[in-house]
Length: 114
Length: 114
Image 1 (cartoon, each protein chain N blue to C red):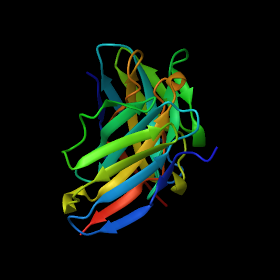
Image 2 (cartoon, helix red, strand yellow):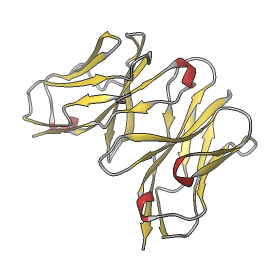
Image 3 (cartoon, rainbow over the protein chains, first blue to last red):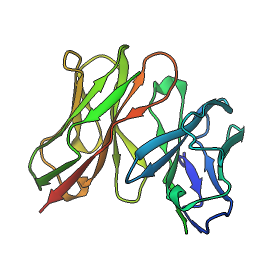
Image 4 (spheres, helix red, strand yellow):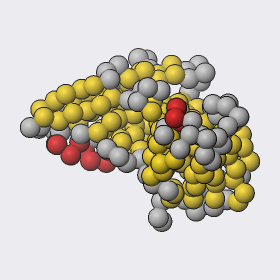
């Protein structure tokens, strides 16, 4: 298996622009998680899905952030409009109920908002 | 709710020396326990996990961890470290029943000096 795939790996954009991050989970996994990692705040869970349905979005910082999972093999995290404080590494992870919590992470997208 | 405390934010050791990274957790229900490793500019990789059974669990790269229920600890150890072990290490817990969500500690940066 190719593991969790994220694109792009790096994104540089200007304040106010829309940013879309993409994730392809491991085939067969039924949970998908979006995280954000910064030096100041560490690793934060933004939102997670089960069987393509959002279960908990309490970590989404504000309305500028939205996430979708139209099917079992694809999810997006969108920031509109982006701000410099959104600069971070965004990780996607997937899991399976039988794994009892073990999650498999993608390589991350490093976002820089100027 | 669950919480995880990693007692050391940074641990410097010399190559071939033993190392212990400390992790304590708090939970009113039984949990599963995990250690993840993050090499520079990479995603998190599962190092080892405790689900049940023997309290001493072995993981990849020669690491092991011991679950101590009475002390609510799950310390990570390696008898002899290598330069390649330089990374950030995260302890995490998930509850036995319910969501697959992980609660992470703040991380411990392990630096190996030659």
